[in-house]
Image 1 (cartoon, rainbow, N blue to C red):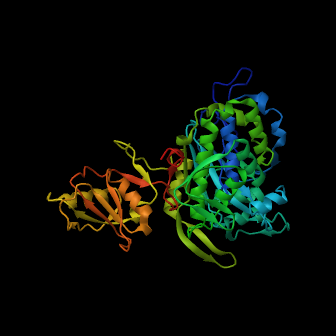
Image 2: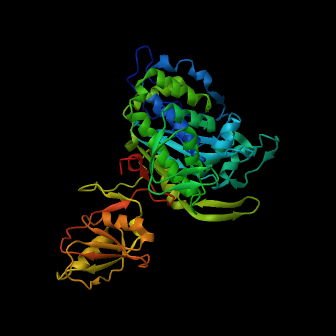
Image 3: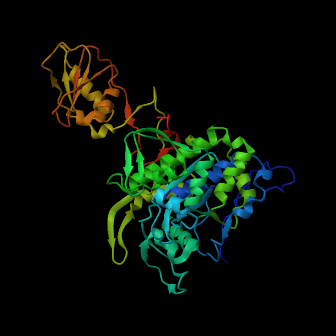
Length: 500
């Protein structure tokens, strides 16, 4: 007998007229459903995630009744066998295809959406909602991940294929949602409970109906391929511009990894917008947003209006701090496969740790002691990228070493060889820098309260700190953007504007 997808679980305290929840073999009552998302490869995911967040307003069946018919259905779990065991919580596979049939010609031109679709997935992520509905964990699966399909029938040609290697995003073209789910389950051993598929149109409409999403950037973002052109600062992005932001992959050499980082930031900002503005308490606005989302979504047959509302009631207190984001840890970039091309090979041990956390309904981030004292100051440049030479500008013995040690402790690349300055009567600590490295200088000065920034042409990339008599302490600083390496886990509230 094939194993069907798990039914959504509903809390014991249900509304009147609803039969009591059935209990499974474990003796635990079933619970509500869930979902989340991810862009170009994560952009459409954002749209689907908003459905879950919107449902959390708990407005009621009256607002959502009739909207179920707007959702296109797919039999994503038909005849599936030998599936992973079910764990606690709920896992949603969020997929975005590159279909663009409903994009207008004006939008194609304005937002650079031309070109023929490949009918493959450009967004793949697993969204896990914890059993207690207090945490959402989003794991991005890079589209170029090395994958091996199980045996299957090609949905286009009808030809039967034995398992073979391919890029993960190509599984959809060969076998649609079913092969995509089976391939992901085989790779992760995480059982998928629900399937959501979204597109460009849904994404733009949802962002527009929400009134835009606030995004911060410490440096200008310009991508000729998508047309994105954002100066440094805070911006409210509407649908089309938000689409450019989450699709951009030619801003730097990190390509998909940096794009995933921006997509995570956008997801956190969307959650913040949807849950903190009171917007979802307006029944008409809630209806408009839900219609915008559901009009372009495909979902498995088991994810309906009742499931959304049950989930929403269980997640009323959801916020950016309730969410965590990561990308599958990559062990080898540019892994060449004959007939497939360059792929990304997952790190076996680290990726297993991530998927084990999903299976066991545990947080993705390793437990860390709660920090004492004030939160770190967020700066535009990671201290690890800033080289510093410390000089003692006073007659106080050992001051140079004390400053050097303190800067190194917060992450700066000090020379670990402090020396005495020519001027030994410095009152105010000075940060001397070549103007070409002004952003690094501002980051360093933030760690030295009361310091003076002093440009010195031709000084080069090493910044100089001349410790003065007024030196008091070094404060902890951290980069404004989450680290770019795959496998790094960030919380939603760590990347939302104004929460840094």
